Length: 331
Image (cartoon, rainbow, N blue to C red; front, top):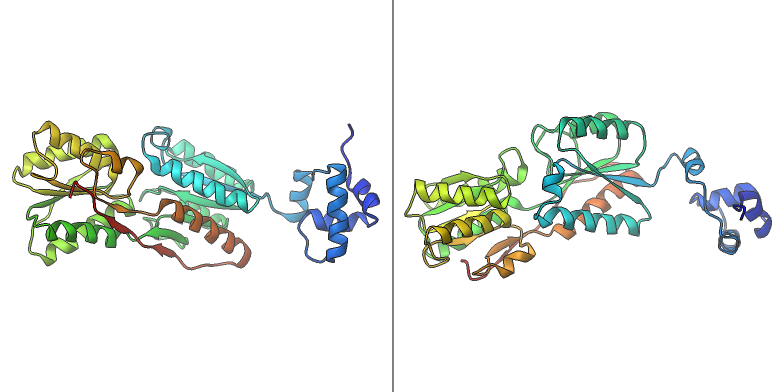
């Protein structure tokens, strides 16, 4: 069947071609009566707008890029954060009638490919996810003047709006809880030092211990389960008498609990464990994991709303969402 044209829709609706064009391109200068007539004709004829032509008129692609600065092995790993954030952001963008384009930028060639794509004007806005300190994308996107926001406070000094969770406050709540439970030698497995989440959670841990005259006992992980296992073994070797550990994310906490079992340490009798994120698996560990709930879904949705607001109205202020201590048997 021949594809209906704007002219055919205009004839069916009894209006001009220009009126049909304004309606299908989202124009606001058409009366409700004419808009209804055009939309009835569109539905009756099965008219589908030519997106390429519409983009030339509106200067919009109706596409948003989700740029994740991690390799595929991390994005499609057992870390549920990525799936939750991508799914929630996609649902929010779909509600706003925007197309989602997922781009991975975990390598220098990936960065270059993303920059070329964004420079080509293929998207109306960008959401940056899992940024690292040396990442060149935030500065590059700022220079491009493409509307962009970051899920998580950027680790570099750029003028980029963001949505983040209260990492410092969450870490402080975790360590205070351990102190209140009578724990005296509290270690931490920190996240990557080039990521704000890692920096802020370590800062919260240290702030509470400094106020209680306890010394810091720190090992570094990379937010993976394996790194938590290795870091916990290192902590036990460095200080066999530790009786608690705050772990900067739940996946590393799962690895830490495995290392404690292998070392013959009981949780929480010998060593209490608190994680961060409240992933679904935290409820099913043995024992169930005490953790700090981070609102991943709400963060993703708020990031989308922030970006859409910037695209419509210009600059916007950063958004900070609260975290919550979830007490289970591990502490």
